[in-house]
Image (cartoon, rainbow, N blue to C red; front, side, top):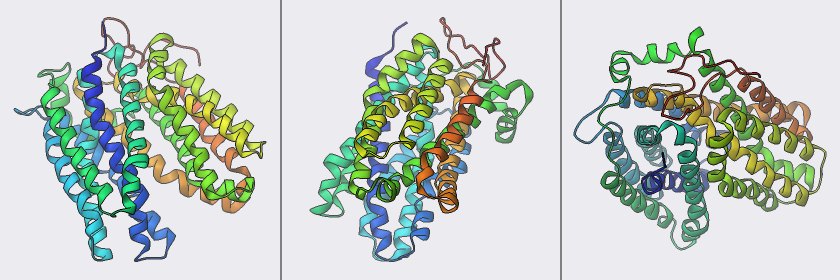
Length: 414
C-alpha cells in the first residue's frame, strides 16, 4: 500500500490557500479595525469570530457533509459553495468604508469559510487509506505552513503598494485551488458505515462521544483541547514576554516565534512517517514530553538566542503532536462519520483558541509575565496524562482500525 502523493499534494492546495487567507486576515484586518476603534479588547473579540464559528457552525456542517451525496460529491458541494463565496467576500474586505461595513463583510466571510473549511479537512481521510493518514496529514500540514510563508513573504509586502492587493491575490488563488480540487479529486461513492451515519442525528453523534464505550475519543479530544490551550496562550503572549522579561523588542519576540513555525514546517512530513513507524499515540506522547522539557528549560533562561534554539526543538515536537492528532481522531470513526469527528476536532481545538489567550492573560495579571512558560506547562502536562488513557486510534495494515468505530481498543500501558 502506497500513498498517492499527487492526489495528497493536490488536496494540500486547499489547505495552502486556507492558510494564506487566514494569515493575511490575521495580519491586516486588526489594522483596519484599529482605524475605527481604540479598544484592544473589542478588536480581540472581533478577531475570534472564526473560532466561535469553529465551535458552532463547523461541527454541524461537518456532520451534514457525512449525510450529503449528489453529483458533485460528498464534501465538494460545500467547497464549491463556500470557497468562492468566501474568496469574493475576502477580496471585498479592504474596500470597506465604515466600521459596520467592515464587520459585516468580515463576519460573512467567516461564515462562508466555515461552510467549507471542515469538509475540506474531511476529504483527507475520505481519499486516504487508514494506515497512511498520518503521512498524508504531514504533507497537508506542510502545505499549510508553506501557505503561511507565501502569505508573509510574498503577499504581505504587496500591502505597501495597495492595501487591497494581498486580499485580491489570495482570492484569486482560492478560485484556482478550488478549480484544481474539483478537477483532480474524485470522492468515493460509498463509505463503510454510511447507513449508520445517515440515520444518526447531530446531537446523537456528538452525545455518543461522551458514552462509556467511546471514552477514548473523549480523552483524546480533551487532550487536544489542553495542549492547544497551552500553545495558543504561549503564542499570544510570547512577544510581550520577550519585551517585559527578556528585554528585547517586539520584532525580536515575533522573529523568535518564527523558529517554532519553521521547525514545524520542516518536520511536518517526517512527523507523519515517524507515527507510521512507531504509532500515533507513542509519537504524540514523545512530542508532548519534548514540549514539556522545552518549556521547562525556557522558563529558566533569559537569553533570546538560546530560546530560539529551544523553539527549533519545540517546533519539531509540535509537529509530532499536531500532525498525528487529527488522523487519530478520525481513526475512531467509521469512514462515513469522518465529517462528524472532524467537526468535533474543530470544536475542541477552536474552543482552546478561545479559552487559551484569556486564561493566560488572567494568570499573567495574577502572577506576572515571568511565569508564562509555567502557565503553558500545566495544560501540556495534563494533555500528556490524558493521552495515556487513550486506547486505539492506530491504523493497522489491511485498512483496519485499532479502535473499531470509536470503541475501546486493546489495552495499552499509560
